[in-house]
Every structure is written in C-alpha cells, then in structure tokens.
Image (cartoon, rainbow, N blue to C red; front, side, top):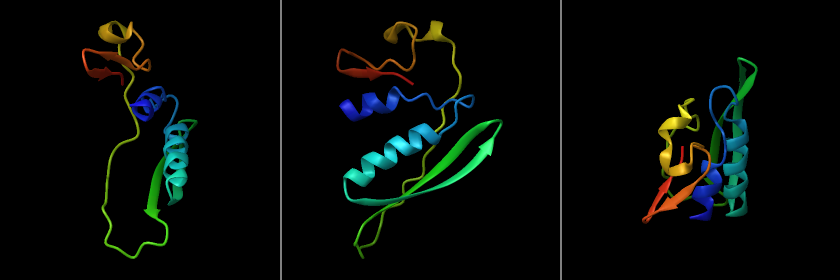
Amino acid sequence: MSLAKAIIRQDSTNRRGTWPLARFVGEQLRDRGFEVSYQKVRENGCIQANLIAHKAGSNERGLLINTHLDTVTTDPNKWSQTGGNPFRPTLHKGRLYGL
C-alpha cells in the first residue's frame, strides 16, 4: 500500500511530464533486481519518458506490461475523498483514492 501511495503522490500531468514518475518507479524496480532503461523526449518544456525494465540475469519468457504514466489535469473540486488534492492518497473504507 505504501508504494501505491507514493506513486499517487507523483504529479505526472502534462504540465509536469512523466520523467519524475518514471524515474521513481525505475528506482523501485532496480531495488528489486530489475535492469532499467528509459526513452526520453522533451515535449512542451517537460520530459516525457518510457520506462523499460527486465529481470536481471533471467532467460525466462517475460511479461509485457504496457501502461500510461501520465495523468490528466483535473478539477480539485471533484476529489472529495482526498480533500480536493488528487495527489494526496487517502484510504477510506478499504479503498485507496487518488489520481
């Protein structure tokens, strides 16, 4: 749960870019024995990144996970469970809320 909360705290909206989140997740994977690399491009003044990771020293068939790291800008008034802050992870009745 703490890792999910840490990921929610990362602002990866278009105005910020995905590089901070990609780097954070990459560090978590590296700590768990993965080899990590990135593809980066600067767009609208922000660095957008793809994260590529594979298990170090493994010759086994892999699993491809393809997902978005970016999030959209949102209306804080619609985030009632997080007190108006979509980047404040909030646990309520067994559910984790956040963008």
